[in-house]
Image 1 (cartoon, one colour):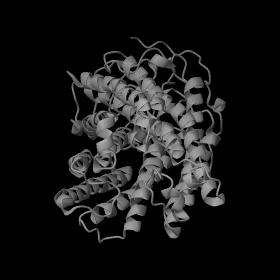
Image 2: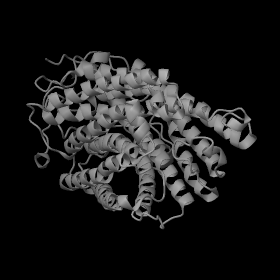
Image 3: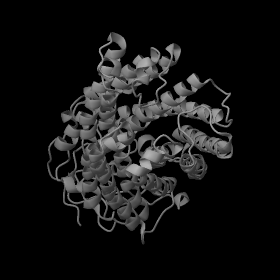
Image 4: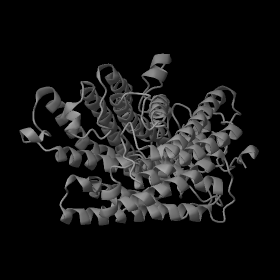
Length: 562
């Protein structure tokens, strides 16, 4: 398709940007209202919390090397796995995928100069670090011990740190809700001229489907947390059955949020994978509309399956059946995505960059997590496996093999756009293989340990399970070594990496048609869009890039990336 001549479009001049460029280090990089800087702030902060959460995970694994569990006391062990789980869900994966990559990437992809509410965006970020500090400060006063789910009545009996946990997660919820509002308005109202819904990049579709989940589901969690805090501090009996409360009420409210939260943690990663595959297979994405609309279907169905987490809570049998069927049904739109990704790879000229390797690894590991989720949807199987390590293995295949693998793929893919430099591909592949092998060695054996009866969330276990626990701990060290390689590679590449140019991958979405890193105003003139973003056989479908770059000459994938 030929690119039409530039035409006058709304927002044509730099002076029409919604706010002037800030001056000074504090305004520019600390209290920034630039969506790109805020996205990088989210990513850096989330990675710092990932280091802390990962250290807690290694302490857990060291404890489980010995069946009698002598490394830490049982109460300390309970604190470790509770804060580890809370960290990875609320301080790493959700902020990284929505606040981090969402902020940096999708406004560029839709041709916007910023998000709809820049000051609200800044506030959303600055609610995040204090919440994380509050969570870790709970160790000073007796950290929460009831797991990341904090079921009453155990959470009513914990130390003062449990109230700190409530306040910290509530703040994260406020931040997420504000982010969801901001993103939804931005996508609805600030797309470039000609960018219809069916021309949006698939990463934007991932954020578009996630934003209502952030807005709606998080309110249920906020109400549940407020009630738990009020009961703990003021004795109002929401959840205490001895005073007329109901501990199952917490489960309903918590999982009404937390099952959609699984999709908050995976839909943006789906969008990342959908950007990476066509770029490195050098062919259009297969089934664009089905991938896009299946994201919306997943978001809607996510609100209808929460009680499959509660089959062991005494849920009436006539309620168990519809939740079981709906949970199995939700696998269909996910299967559509996996089929479309594999079809995209089929017959493509694949470039095995580090980003592509993590994307392919994502398919393998997330699919395994999805299949075990189908098993757990069946009531009889769930009743057997619910309290065992099978659940731990399933959860990590979804959230680590899915979300975290997607995050690493996204970092290697968009790092050149963020910094203007390429990460080292050799060490990137070392990172991939250490992480992939270590991950599977850590979490795959948990499935059969669970089926054999090893309970989760206990500091000691039957000696017959010792071999596989030692094996898992050694494998976790391998995974940690891979993450260490990643951090060293990233820090070295920021200053010393090969200069990337504006489009090192020859990608076609709008963010790759402007300099790297992007200028403050993103686009000197808001571009006009004339077709979809993934047909590599056609000229780029944009005009109005104001001659900054020759948008019709795609850059090749670097030679070292093959």
